Image (tube, rainbow, N blue to C red; front, top):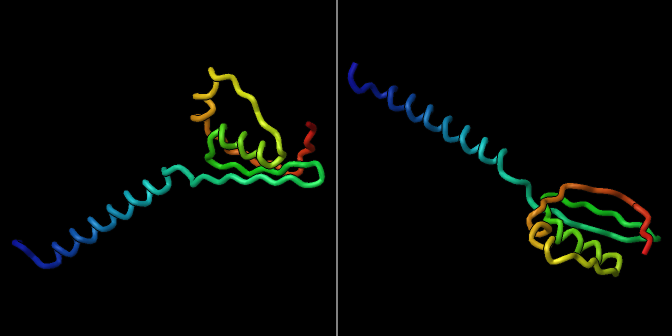
Amino acid sequence: MSNHPTRGIHFMVILLLLLVALTASATVSAEPKETLSATAADGTLSLEAVNSTLDRVLIKVGETIHARFVVEMSLADELATARVDTSFTRVPVVI
């Protein structure tokens, strides 16, 4: 059995299936897209944060409720790398 035409087709189908499987697993293991939103209404705060850094979440919350968070310099690097996945709705804000 030398170079039979269907062998090449089978090889191409197997190669294609392998590429699809590798691409699908790479897509599944990729980090989710960053989402960050905050709203304030009637003295409450709602937040959705997906794959956002903690410093960005604190800035967004501060902008939303018109307040500033003061953070020690020694923690700044950790806040910039810590990832946040959380959400809450209508939490009372006391300033």
